[in-house]
Length: 489
Image (cartoon, one colour):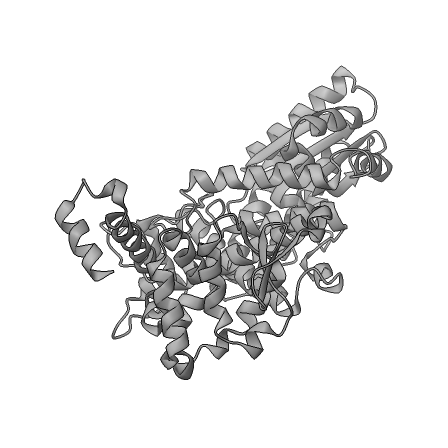
């Protein structure tokens, strides 16, 4: 991996009349190294960091070749995924070039030559050239711009200019935490709607679908802007993220990174859609093998779906935690429901942290209460955590307990909210714990083009449609089926 550590590269560059060829060949060697390291099963986090740092060296050397004497007047910085040090084989290289004073024509021309040079050596480069003032102006208008700048990473040039830009776009100056939080939350909701609000489709997008890498980035963006945390680990020391949650996120991130790099290598370019035709090849690439009851590709996709469900859930918990910090006034609006539960600001919570351990039936009761009180918005973050920490209490004795069987049937009998509550029971792991057969279909897909969702997601649609038969306003659609449904219920 010693592409730049000895003097040979510098000597070759000094003697070369065709630097494009030298840089192109070096880039090709770097990409070949990445493919070999991936095939040798180098850990994802190590591979992504190493590749990013090699690109840093390549781009910095290209920059210094084109601007040997302007390092105090210009700054080059990495932004986006490159700024986060998360480059994959087919990732775009996003660059920000900063200037203090408006560049002279000769400098602008040299900047154009530099960008063309990067394209000529076969780098996919996105770039912007701005003054610090322009960065601030654009960032005020667009939350995606401030997000990009927030992740900026200095590469070369004037460090003072870079620090000035970071200081003038800090939360103290623009986009205060609550405003940033609201804008990013709306952005995430819109993105989720584009993917039908489900991570369980046949051909998910590793980056953009619910539970994908963007949901993980969302946690990082909010944490950085709201708490100053530079990475996930700092959230643990700030008591925002539990240690086990941190470990789950890292494992999930590393798996998605491995899948994404593998997908890029498979198709030879940037591609984030986990298309049907790629899934079988990726399963083989990741060493999955057919078993008696599951194809290799089904095992691979099951792990994918369970991974994104984990990210999606932790994304929800962290967002809820941040929301609660902003809703100071709502902390006083307590409404007791029974000795075990109350609402705070419209969200369900336990009256103390031992409710689920002292009264395990509350693991089902909480969902029945959610149905019976339509104004409840959801469950508070710490209560979700307590619920998940007590899932082990749902065992064979719990399932056979008449009280719990009655609670589950009462959930089925409620006149409204069944589909939503069933989805949340599945999301939090309660449904699979109470019905082990359901856990076995969770994240299970059938590798054909007919079934466009996982088996558990299809089951949710069946529950929704059966529920529809029992509602008076829909009985005219299928009268006989509605009549039979009424008899069953």
